Structures are given as C-alpha cells and as structure tokens.
Image (cartoon, rainbow, N blue to C red; front, side, top):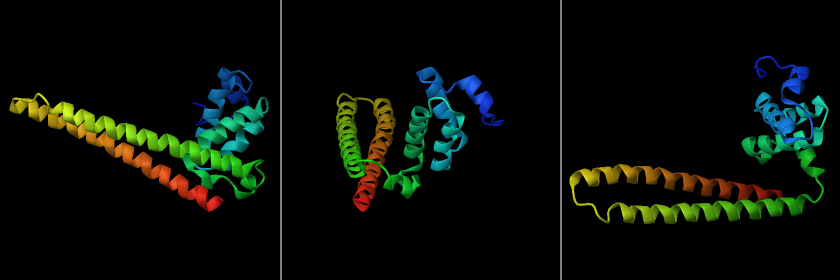
Length: 162
C-alpha cells in the first residue's frame, strides 16, 4: 500500500498528478492521508510531486482544513490570503446557513416521525418496535445538535479572526 511505503514516483505512477479528476482527486486524498495531523505537510506534499500542483494542493488543503480545523492553517498563510475578510465572511455565512438549515430540517423530521410512530399503535409489540425506532430518531436528533454546535464553534472562530 502506498501509505506504508511512500515513494513520490510510485504515487505519481499509480495515482497521477495531472489535471484530470481521475489523476488529481485520488492523489489529493492520498496526500491528506499521508499527513493527517499536519495541514502544512499535507499541502506541501502534493506541491513536491509536480504536475497540477495548484489543483491537487488546493484539494488537499480543503480536505485537511475540514478535518483539522481553521486553526491548523498557518497564520502567515492566512495573512497572505487575497480577499481574506470577504472569504471568511462568505464561509461563515455559508456554513451557518447550511448547518442551521440542516439542524432545523432534521429536528422537524424527528418530530414528524415521532408523531407518525405512535399514531396507529395498538399492541404492546408495536409500541416496543416504535420505541426502538424512536431511539434511532433520537440519535439522528443528537447528530443534528452536534452539527449546530460545530456551526457555533465556526462562528466563534470567524468572529475572533475578524
């Protein structure tokens, strides 16, 4: 496997480093997986491969940044970002809009599903089955809450940056 035996020539030969998606997406994923704890190293690795370095580096950075968080990006890199404030504002609006809408949608589905679950229950076995289903919906609701918490953290980060 490539991760256990890193060799740039082999990565390029097996995954590619070209402009085509089939030559860049797998390489970006590999670059992240080869350096999952360092945003800087993950982004620098595809640059060292040559080829379509800007595309593969950007994809790797997106994956690594999503995984490691905003604080993992070196401050000196963020300071040099063109239109930084606009990009951060846009990212905050996009994330908050998406996360809040998703949380609300999941909550509404959860409530609707609960009301549907118990609507026609007439036997004990049905009620037990419904309670099991309710537990599944509860987990979905908790997942929605975690998404909301993540949105709040990102909002706090964006406020601290600006």
